[in-house]
Amino acid sequence: MQEKPYYCPNCRSNRVKFSIISSYSQRFLKDALSGTIQELSEPLQLEDQEPTIQCLVCSYTANEMRFIKQAEREPRAMTPTNPSYL
Image 1: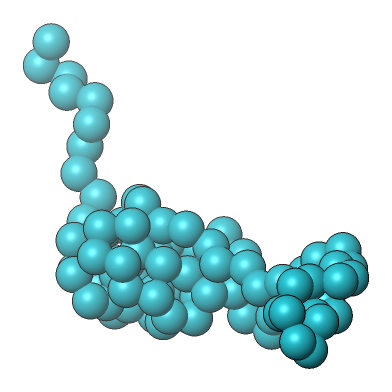
Image 2: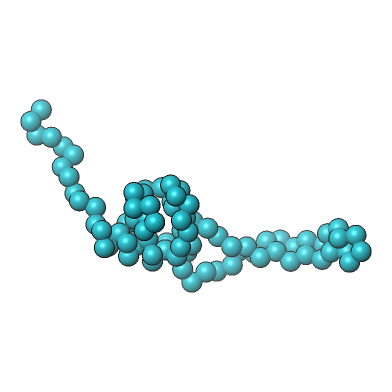
């Protein structure tokens, strides 16, 4: 994952709540008649070229670059958070 801002291109409101989706491969053998699992291997994580990201507001799912590019097109306006009048 890159250290860059995200912005959901679907709901256009979320910049902070996301999840990363990982893929796993797990081999198994089934009995041809009963369908019961006879052998199950350990799960292996598949290496993706680019992470798959999901917006936790609208559930939109896409590759990481889609969220990064949207954030670049619509950058967040910086506002002062330290009022000096106090």
